[in-house]
Length: 140
Ligand SMILES: [Zn+2]
Image (cartoon, rainbow, N blue to C red):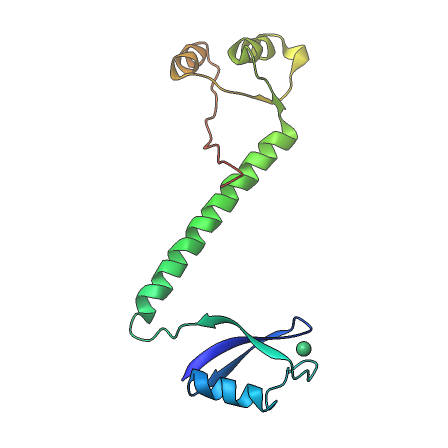
């Protein structure tokens, strides 16, 4: 048995099983195949889905792992979006700004930026604790 993804001339896609590829050609040439949505008889093969039998378990496992990774990445993306939305980005003199905000209570606002491990160390000695978060790339 072979499964084909079929497509009609109205771009409807559906799946169908055939005993072999010749059967598909035969039925299609006789106009015996029709779209399950619009009954169009202009059907062509889309992408062929190979049957997965013996390696099914491995395959499922890989899929779960990918899904989990995707979830984790989505969480990181959400975190990044949250920070970008609620915090002001400070490109230059980040640690200087952090100190200003820390010592001058009037200008309290949420900021984010980059700090080197040494800068973090210095700040933490002054009682300013920065939170580091993984910064996930949006484009890959
Ligand atoms: Zn159709």
